[in-house]
Image (cartoon, rainbow, N blue to C red):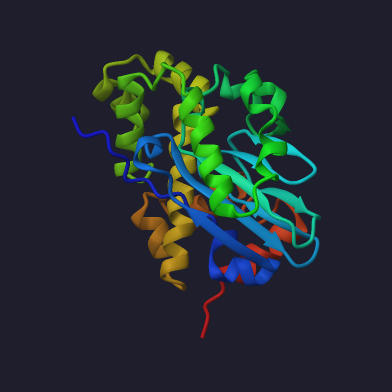
Length: 272
């Protein structure tokens, strides 16, 4: 059975439009093959002025470092505005694939859904000095190499249960347009047990996770083909414009904060 993931999370802030809007300089690097199933990418941004950094829900998690702090990002169900106040100093992130944090840390991810918390939550002493050691390195490339070496050294023997792994794959392949009853039947779990696994590994119920993937792919399609918003919504299983707008509101895409509201509104205006 092919478990390779076709999912590519979308973050508007990391596009050229987003970088220009928030004055960001971006570096991004895919992990080595030995970490590609657990880490989506390593990311580093610098800002030329204090700004906000809106993160849209995409089902992933991130370890987030600055010269002053280190944080773990729980799975988000609405836009999260992260303040970037250190001008021209690097913010470094280890961007985990959905559900893959437990490959390194024995934690219940549902405990930190919609939160940014201190690294103590991860209960792994090997990572508590990561921030200090990262900023002893002089370049993004060196920080990536150091992070990869540490991750590989401390990867845990636990991996995603095969049935959960298959459920995630089916959700990605269907862009979140998935019946939970059919999904549970397909992977051989009861809906209750499937939900318990989703909560433990992804921080969301199976239905909420699928909806997050669907909304993230909707935002991505709108970016790639500006002006066809309702068409993309209907193509992704939204019944009509009212259903689409209601789901957008549930994820705080336009309403979480003035910063996010203005950015997302301008981001999806037809250009040219």
